[in-house]
Length: 291
Image (cartoon, rainbow, N blue to C red):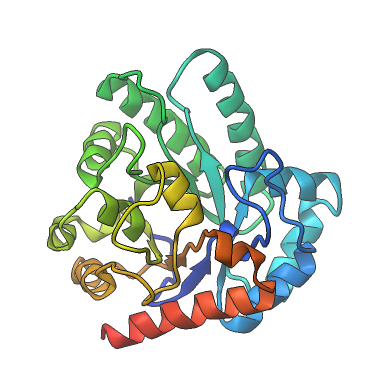
């Protein structure tokens, strides 16, 4: 995986949910209620240089102001790159694959217009076991499609999915063997599966597409899915080994962006400007403290 040109350490990217206001991945309507231009301006003013957009907002933007206008708003506010999410079930079959392919179509089309750096992809939350070679074959095809529109694919291991750990993801990535496909490392998922932070040091830097910072209490509340959506905290407010994570990622030689992904009941009801600013400032402090 070849990292994008011109990248340098400690650039912060605001995940879509960090800036979306009163909506969540569990809502039927996942569109942000915050005016897009206002949302981007606040995010950029706090110091973020990357901006995340979810599929629901891509569709809304395309149907309202248009993606070209959205691109201009991003660039005019100094946003350097965009992260798109979230593509699930991209290697499955049946209705789940049909739905996934519609999301894929929209995300790839958006990447042709917006300054997209990478597209986040997960696996599936179902219990069906899928052969690794099949997943790898599908990932190679997906990465080829992303490369055609100038984007990378970031495979995110998720504690509740069938690609659960970096080891799982690396096995698929090695078999897929495509330079546009790489790894997303979210500290939440690593902590929740008990992944040793020191093991990150063994991951080749060129395979890491992006990272995500956040925090949480030591104990899971509800299911893992409910916990990841409703219980995340700002960096430094929970139990996570954030310094260990940052130091291990840096030890690989990684120089891409640090995503900040905060999802919680508390975060969603705060004034958006305060929520975004605190997400930025606590992540920046964590990065500075780990130098």
